[in-house]
Structure formats: C-alpha cells, structure tokens
Image (cartoon, rainbow, N blue to C red; front, side, top):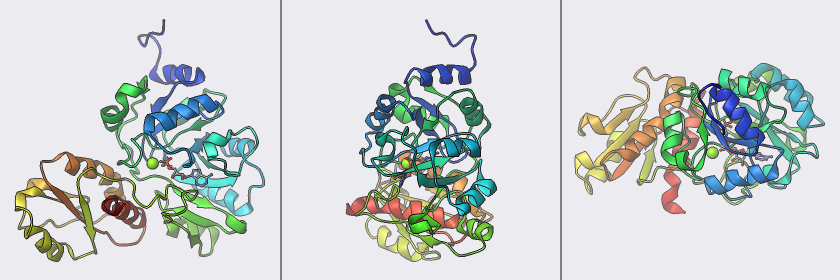
Length: 331
Ligand code: TXA
Ligand code: MG
C-alpha cells in the first residue's frame, strides 16, 4: 500500500510516474499533465484524460542541456545558443528526435519539442527519474490552461492520482516554441520568452509561423484554443469603450464581463471587470491572464469582452491567447 504520510510529494510523484501513472506538475509557465515520455501507454492516457486529438504532439520535459542531446540529434548551433540563454526557462525547441521517443509523443513527426522547466519542484522531480516527461498543459483540450494547482484539481482532479502543488505559475503563459525548418530559427508559438529576447541572443530577426488552423501539425495551432465557455470577444487597443456600446444594445451592464490591461469601463459595475496590470506591466499581465479568464468565466455574466494589449514583449503571447479564445464562436 502506498501511503503519502512519510514520503514527500515529489517522491510520490516519481513513484507514480515510474509505474506509468499521470501526475500534474507545476512549471513556471502553466501546470503540465505529465507521464513517462518513453512509455507509450502512459502517454496515451494523457490524450484520453485531456480529450486531446492524437495529431497534436506533446512537449518533452527534461532537466539539462546534456539531456537534450539524449533525446534529439543534429542540433543546430543557434539552438544551442538559445538553450544556453533560456534553459531552464520558457522555451521549447523543436529538434530532430531520436528513435526511442515514441511516435505518439510527436504525433508521428520527425521532430520532438524539448524544454527544461524553470521551476524548483519540477527540476527536483526530473532529476530523480531516469526518463523524460511528456506534458501538455493540464487542462481539458481547448480550455484555458491552468496556472495554479486548484485550477488543475477543479477540472482534472478526479482523473489523476496526484497534483503536485508548486504554487502559482510565475510566467503564466506557455513556453515560446522555436523550430528550425530548413535550418532557419522560426517562432511557432508566442510564449513566455519574448521575440525581442530571442532576436537579441541570435543577433538577427527570426521568422514567425504561428497560426495555422488548417495545419494542426503546426504547434497548438488549432486557431481556436485557450477558450472560456462563455462567449468571448476581443477588440483593438483603446477601442473597448466603443466596442462596449455594441454589447450594451444587447445586454444589461451587469451581464457583461470585462478583461483589460488597465483602466476599466465606468459604465459597468467594477466587480465584473478584471484588470491585468494597473501599471501596464505585460509580464504581470501574462502571469494573471489565464486566472482572469477563469474568474470571468465563473462570474454570473452572459458575455466577456476583452481588449488587446500592446504587441511587444509578452504582449504578443497575451494577444495570441486572447485572439484564440475569441475564435471559438466561429468554429
Ligand atoms: O509551457 C509549456 O510549453 C507547457 C508546460 C506544461 O510545459 N506545455 C504546453 O503544452 O503548453 P501543450 O501541449 O499545451 O502545447 C504544446 C504545443 C502543442 O500545441 C503542440 O502542437 C506543439 O507544442 N508541439 C509539440 N511538439 C511538437 C513538434 N514536434 N512539432 C510541432 N509542434 C509541436
Ligand atoms: Mg495547451
């Protein structure tokens, strides 16, 4: 019999993972739903629990740059530069996979997404096991990613034996994904490391190949994603007061929820408005984004309206998530 009384949660997590079970783990970006990446059956359970289509590949988590080489080969020089600058951290590199990485992890693709999370508990966990962890965000497919252990328990608690509680995620949006199609560093998903920071390290501009609703082989890029259950609409920076007028024609003021960076709407009750950073700090806004979306989704309102943030730094990742949250209505 396994008892949690005398062993730490990390040890328990290691034991569960070693025998093929799933454990929700904290990272600095969002919580992940982890399984032994080398155990195809355990990985299959991730897809089942998340209700995730198996054509959407998983990121593999490891603990050191040397460990990257164990799971990938032909690593470009610029990938090493990025790894040295940002690992551990909110960066995922897409690299040619070695044969022992099961096809179910990469959805049959020849590349594997590798990342070293910058979170003490996650690193302690990874150090104590002799296999890497496949882990997507620990939310039902298509819904908002979890940034606290409570978010995970609320949605997946029943389905998994352990949620390792590492506190609130400090970055709050998923990792930036960089691939190297034809050897060119290319951003495949905006995330916790800004484009500016990546370009600074590489000393040149990088391409971006983010949205592709028709080609799900590209990262998480089913256009609609990260979505609240309530109708969610988003408008340009500075346009929220004008946008609101449209909704006031249809809804009472107290039925409208608002998500904005700073400065609420005086025409609406304040308790239905969530502001991400009164100082306009985009890192703070990213950290609060998914929690704010969940909070609004749980409020007694009929519709949520949001405003984009400046398209710089982590603003790109925030805007990407806002846009995809708003697309559910059309798909
Ligand atoms: O911050 C993060 O990256 C979090 C934490 C838990 O590490 N994980 C995360 O996983 O966001 P997930 O599964 O929600 O999103 C990973 C995205 C997927 O949309 C997938 O399409 C893409 O990464 N991806 C993974 N491996 C890939 C590959 N070999 N080629 C292309 N895209 C890949
Ligand atoms: Mg996800």
